[in-house]
Length: 114
Image (cartoon, rainbow, N blue to C red; front, side, top):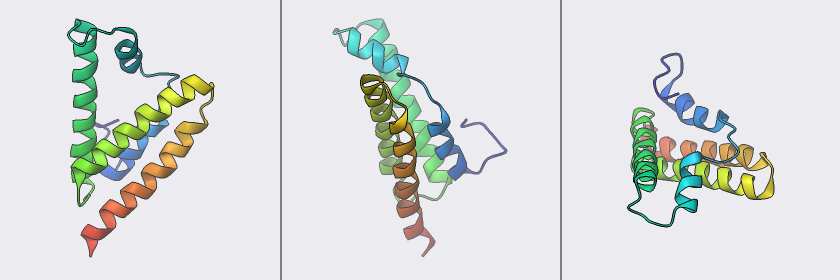
C-alpha cells in the first residue's frame, strides 16, 4: 500500500485499514513467544518498527504537523483493532479504528495548512 502511486499520501495511510486480517501474525508471534531475544520476536519487533516508520514517512508526505505522533497513533490503532477483533471475533474494530484514524489525520494535517 505504501508504494501505490495511484493514491495520495493521505489515501495510502487510510489504505492500511483496508486490510482485514484476523490477527497480525507478528503480534501473535510476540504474544506466544516469551523470550524477547528469540529470532521470531526480533523479526516481529523489527517489522513493527519498520511499519510504524513507513506510516510516519507517509504522514510526513501527507503534511502532518507531527508525523511521528500520527504514525505511532495509526500503528497503535491497527494493532489494537487487530487484537481486539480477534479476542471478540469481530471486524467491527477495524472500521472503528479507520474512523478514528481519519479524525486523527484530519486534526494533525489541518494545523499545518493554516
